[in-house]
Image 1 (tube, rainbow, N blue to C red):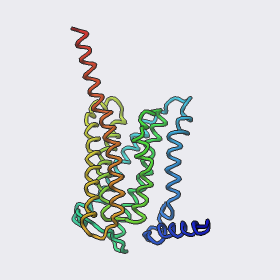
Image 2: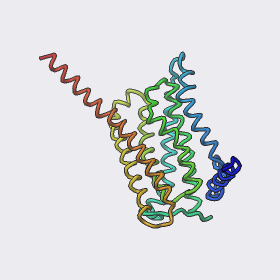
Image 3: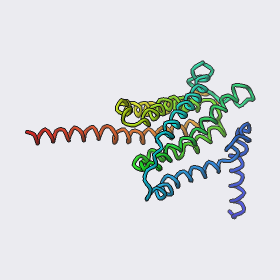
Image 4: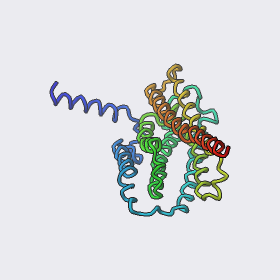
Length: 279
């Protein structure tokens, strides 16, 4: 096969994916005309967080941004609650079928409301990038784990495809759960930002991680329904969610074991060794 034929085949497949299969309703929406600005943003995020940011902070003291973080986490709590309320109008009121929900591609009010909800969910993942930037500015590099960087880094990219092709329907169950968890999570961060005088009362951080694990299991199981129930929902997106949920469940589970199970065992060992020395 000649290079010309390969190029023509590649272009035909590219046009089929990005032109023929797309949802034309979002063509003029911010960041939706092409996937490449989002790809560039994800790559830039990784470069800033893992390379440029640490270099910039190498010979500088940590910035005192406590007040900025308090305002940021409060605003994030409100934004998450607002998007969650949008999702509740579909998943809690009975408009959506919990077993299998097709996408409404019409020009109806509900069709655009679901599409608008998915776009705000996508855009919120860009705002989440500030979590990582604040860690860099505070020189909390240990917080920039593989889990944190992978989770934050790829979310705008994965969410973009949802809006472009399935803006509404079954996949929004993920956003529904995720925004509910984010309300609690950012409220925790908001309280934690006040410092030690408040942090000593935040004993429930461990249970927040447990809630995140339950979230991934829930939308993993929910994504399997269209594979067995016919409702005109693209099955390929069920497989995408299954991969996404499985990957993040394993990453969060590893974090949970490292942060709580093993640390708890180490504390027990220290206490036991101390008791032996006293004996």
